[in-house]
Image 1 (tube, helix red, strand yellow):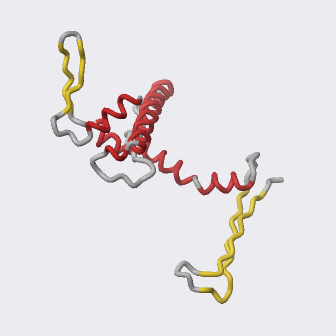
Image 2: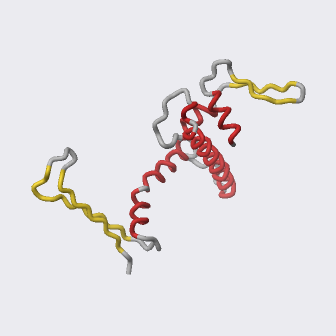
Image 3: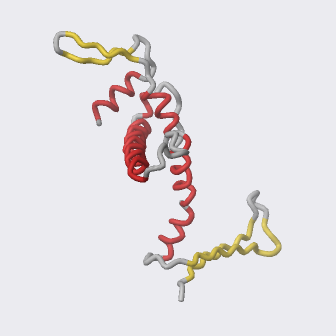
Length: 156
């Protein structure tokens, strides 16, 4: 016996606001054994595209399409390193969204793709300087991402 969750939608108007002669009825069924409420199960299934997008970013943006070795332990270590880098880049992307007023471009999205975080913040040109026992990063005089980079680096 498998529980079935239903979501029934009745539309009386089309997308342009015109009234329909016959109502349009859409039925979604979810066959699941998850111990959750119906609303939670429906929300999980509707949000599966986000999980697919994260998987795609891991494969393409992090270049983890093919594992480097035939040995399980080596691939496990490689995936752990990729997971760590992925999570750090996601945290940096979230900080970028929270401080988007400092960004030199207009950011409308709720999250940034890893490719954009790498391009905009990680690959920012700078120079590593050691002087009098002090180590600093020197950015160009007119670096458009410097204020955002500085804000994010102090908050991490």
